[in-house]
Length: 391
Ligand code: F6P
Image (cartoon, rainbow, N blue to C red; front, side, top):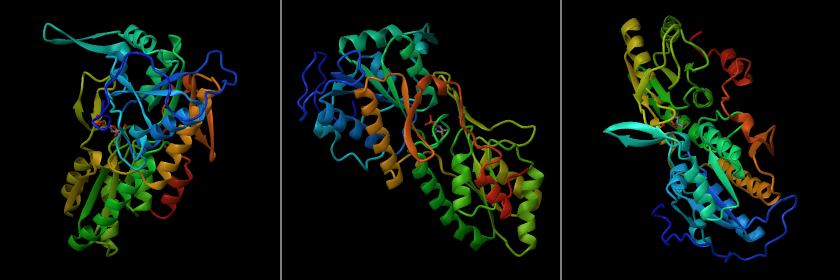
């Protein structure tokens, strides 16, 4: 378990020490005494705010014991978990990362084992089921993105009562208008663009800022617009390098000797491929993107003669304190998850739609991705003020 939790794990059941009485559960087929929670996938700001909300409201309002599972699904596979006490979840609201630890490589259906030095994958779903039984967990709350929801749907199909809470800085989870972590990432990226403006102007350079987002351009679109980028390149729009260079030259000819280009890591040129930084064969989603920013900067310099530099924001976008909007969203999501749990409505994913918290069938989101639509009002607004999208 995380170094933030310091008491010893116990495999034996124990009764709740939290204040409040156990209420009868509306619509529930079984009494809810104990729930396991885990954070899975890439971390993002706001995870601890959700953990705190779930643990405190489950314990205080419903007298449900909450067990923290370490490092995502791998902790379930390896039976690493412990009961969360009030002290464990106090003073973590603003803390970045996750006190439970996480993992973006673990799928129990494809667990790596060593075989004669090489990697071999086995299905260890049964281990998860055994440990849920052994620890007497009545349900599981999974805080994760699309990959984690696919695993959750698999556990649901095996009869494990599960509830999902969406998280990701990428904002690409289908079914919800927003995930916590996204607004903080946008704020960090926007701050970086703001800072790069002054150095770009001083040196009369084209400055490329590469942001995260995998196959969705939400971070690039929001931070690019908020930071006044002249060019925004998204995975959803294959870009024409000539048009990108022409936009930089056009600005130069009008006396604007610097340009800001906000490039999503998943953006790709017309007829070209996404830039891959590394392949991790041990991961169910092995591709890690990166490098398109430098590709664009090199092309600009070569074609236009204008000096170009690249800044890759990388994991700084995932780190540190969540901004207030993400804290609030995380609290709303966590609270809704506990209400759903108390009502015994399993297989649900908490979502935010049209400004209201609700929940949907968790299996609906599996295999789907929420990408920037071409009729997005933000995209249209940016086009109308002259932002180039390379198309
Ligand atoms: O999904 C979140 C995310 O930060 C993506 O934006 C990025 O492509 C990926 O995770 C990076 O993964 P890792 O932490 O394994 O480098």
